[in-house]
Image (cartoon, rainbow, N blue to C red; front, side, top):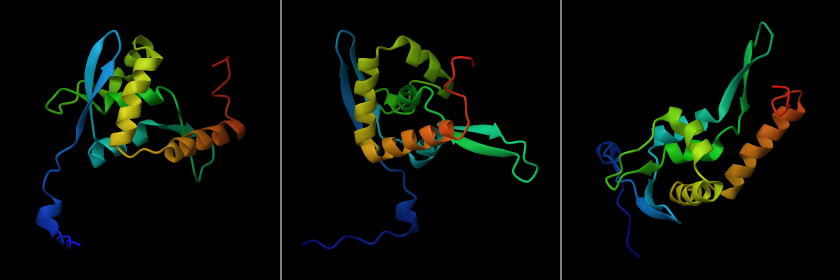
Length: 145
């Protein structure tokens, strides 16, 4: 068994090569999807949170999970050209979600989840946290919003 090399600070700070995978979109063509950097994954995870005012002077705000444009937000931080340059801006998520078919978006998301090690358990935790937030009095699922 080959012993692994112990990395130092310099080696750890070198730019990683992000893996890229081609994804076929039937009837349209193909796109490239890539791994996220740590910063991009943080941005994506933060995009799933929304700030809510509590009215409490000691804790005036809290954060709740928001599944709004969940798939499109993941696509925005992973769809790239063949060199790995992202094609979308974070503000494109809502537009993309409204224009791309659910089946094509799911193909992209499936590849992005695989490349970025986002498990079904991770998704379940996001959904579970969102449902818990709504059950605690949020009317964000209400048709009156």
